[in-house]
Length: 117
Length: 156
Image (cartoon, rainbow over all chains, first blue to last red; front, side, top):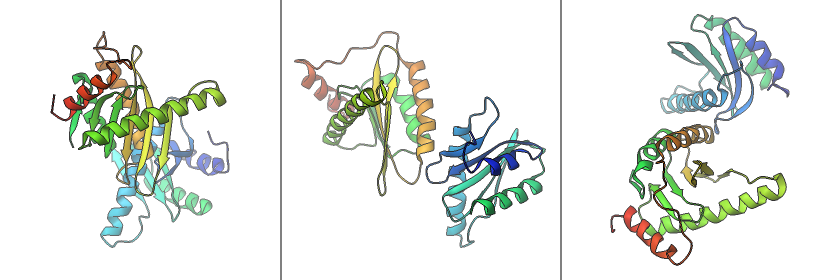
């Protein structure tokens, strides 16, 4: 993939140590807009589930009167998913190794989000 | 949610699909319009109408696909204000069905697509070696249709 304007943003994210995949996903539809994936990775599945999670987090934060969700992180046994979203429908997400540096990924995701805005 | 099936082996995969995809309504039917299973409908007339319309829309998009793309379109998605529908072919080798799914903001097209793939795999694994009975559009069609609707809504 990465054949359009999002390519450089995704490539920058994927270059981070421990990052397995980076995706730009429509929050409403849960569909991939663009992605860099390793061979064999099921991007559609990650995109659908993570977009759904992000949407739920955003709605929960709004219901709790906490404002917008700035950053979402889900740690699992064999990897972690980090996601950021802005005012638009797009969610930027990264699938990383459990040992990856989340702080660095977070900074890069927020920088990438500014680029997309 | 009320789930009713004409063929028992369909029930578990369909129930799982409806729950995981958070669908509001689901309908599994033969391309002729005969119902195989339904989830979420409360009136037989609604099922009958939905089956007829879904079969017609599927046939139309299949033919349109054949004309513009050389092969029939297999998946159709419509987005409404509150609800969306996903209409797709379920090919089980010996027998083919159509699955109509209605969902709202609780779900998303991505989730429905993903779990629809799982549903197809589960149905293929659960399908009996010999289909129970082929659908018919001849003299028995109306009787079969009424029988299926009665079975779904407990009046068999």
